[in-house]
Image (cartoon, rainbow, N blue to C red; front, side):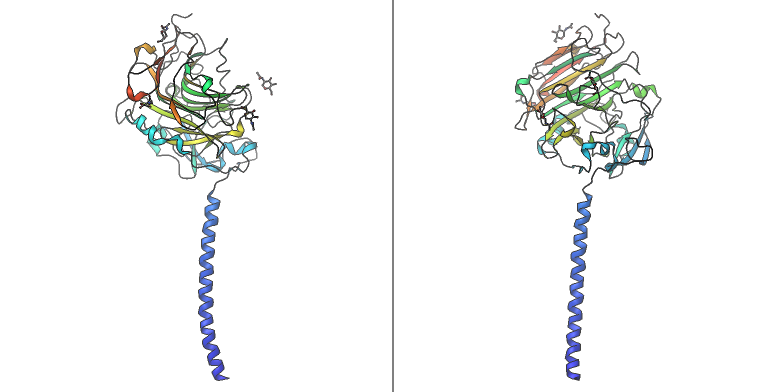
Length: 410
Ligand SMILES: *[C@@H]1O[C@H](CO)[C@@H](O)[C@H](O)[C@H]1NC(C)=O
Ligand SMILES: *[C@@H]1O[C@H](CO)[C@@H](O)[C@H](O)[C@H]1NC(C)=O
Ligand SMILES: *[C@@H]1O[C@H](CO)[C@@H](O)[C@H](O)[C@H]1NC(C)=O
Ligand SMILES: *[C@@H]1O[C@H](CO)[C@@H](O)[C@H](O)[C@H]1NC(C)=O
């Protein structure tokens, strides 16, 4: 008995150790499983924030900053951004990596000669904490601002000086350009606006993606009272799926665009002078289709900002049929509202506004220098554009555009 008990107790001891080791192993496995689970749950899903008012809005600010231009930026949780309210984005897993053919490297090479820099918000406050995105605070009582019937070129209340690509090379999978950032004068800053942008277009009614900078025209919808802010160039994005009727909006004022970047503010002020280099300012813009989302990625100045899911669109769902680049002014016929820098394109560099390194991606998802053709100028006496061949070797395809306003018009 004793010996048996002895054996048994030594067996029990080794059994104890075996069990102990086994439990340790189990715990290890479990903790690694937990870690996997945690990693899986780090895949962030859009999750609409709802309060008792039932309004479509971003979630509450985790942190807020006032920028020196007088505007306010709220940092909201990435899952709770306004896109989460879109019916087609229910439970959408937020994507984090754009396709390689967007080619930041190339972008950087194109941009480094002039020096890109972050917006005022990023320069002054560094950005939002991880897991948040910066949202410009606007007056929620104001109606959504819309662009109107852009590109409907007859009897338009807008002025254009654009250039484009023949649709014969369509379908297009991407568009890019480096834009000079200027500060055109405005007649009535709250009403008039002046823009430099690129358009990706498809379908009827028009589906668009639009990106660039805009001065003026915000009609008091921002949080800041300062006029000087209205007069500064501000980054904007815009989209519509029905010719500017019901769908779409500027920046993050409605649900649609999904932002992933925590430093760039859509609607935020761009400086026209790089403080470090004292050189004039540029931004580079890339929009490229990705079948993984599926949708269109946006990058500004080497930084991934976010994307438009294809399902927002009826026709711009996998490619564009037209690409345009250039300037737009509202309203038409103004004496006091300038486009670009206010100089006519024949003044050239460095006086006139420009877009350079203008490229398109075809269905092979490769970017090519655009052979710019479809020039459209609504009143060349007011604002003009001129496509250049050669001159600056590293500028690729480029054009100057703009003008002082309709001093001699019509
Ligand atoms: C705008 O949408 C409304 C509602 O769907 C429709 O009745 C109207 O015809 C549309 N207007 C235009 C100009 O497409
Ligand atoms: C995608 O766009 C094409 C036209 O460009 C259209 O025929 C098709 O129905 C669209 N698909 C979806 C899912 O909207
Ligand atoms: C507009 O620009 C084009 C191209 O540079 C030029 O030929 C034309 O004369 C300009 N028009 C006016 C009215 O200045
Ligand atoms: C295309 O444009 C880039 C600048 O963006 C330039 O360096 C390159 O030489 C151009 N390539 C061709 C084939 O013109």
